[in-house]
Image (cartoon, rainbow, N blue to C red; front, side, top):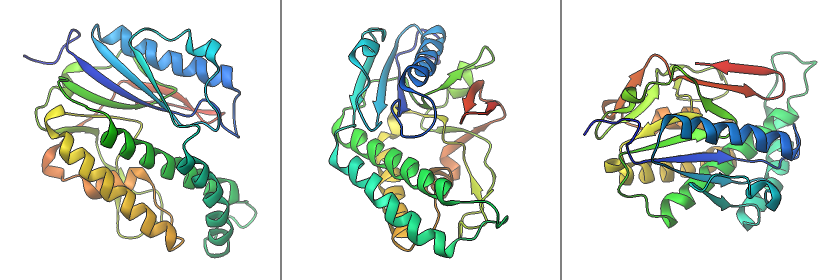
Amino acid sequence: MSLNKDSKVLFLVSSAVNVVWGNKELVRFAETIGTINSINANFNNAEIWLIDSGFKSIAKRYLEELPKNVKVIDFSKDPTIRKILEDSLIFTKNASKTIVAKDPTIDITPSLKLGYIKNQTECYVFNKVFKEYLIKGYDRVFKISGRYSLSPSFNITDHDSRKKYVFYNAIDSNQSTIKGIDKMYFCFFWSFCNDIIDDVKLVYKEMQDEMNKRHDSIQIIDIEHLLYNFIDDKNTKHVNKLGIFAKVGETSSVFI
């Protein structure tokens, strides 16, 4: 049976509604609701796991607004998440001494800290979810970042690919400080066949190990480059359009 609107699918939504930077809780939660609504507009039989790793839990009054097909996995009290926040200060202090911005007038400290937290946190929570939760019986599994939404141009059939990952075309690396990986995948939206869940788990373990090794050596690394590095190209289908839009940060946006 081909993938269609009635297929049983799982969406893993990475989220951090409460953050120490950027918009307030209500704004970010409303954007995440937009993500969830866009999924339900495209699929009749979706299960959605909201994997949230903000510094505190989402307020109960907001959670009560979630549709019935959403399960919240809350990492806000996880001690490892707290440790990542603490370790980011040490990494940032050391990295700022060795990594020089192209423009010396720019303070790169905030971006170093944010990059460390975002990449370490997402890698950790997905490793834990893959290890502790049963992912079985789905026609397709999608990973989407909260605040990103499926647009009217989203094409379900692009992801109808057995035993394959589906990514947007790999693009050239935009980080001269990342050594040995010359391309990257967008990590905000991709999918995989449930049949290869064991390979997905292995990829995430390898990504976490490599990330820890590089960060211990005060090197820059991110999930986009690690996905490209550890996923075998022969197991991947590339698409020219994702049908995804989002507000990125506080000022820019993306429509791919």
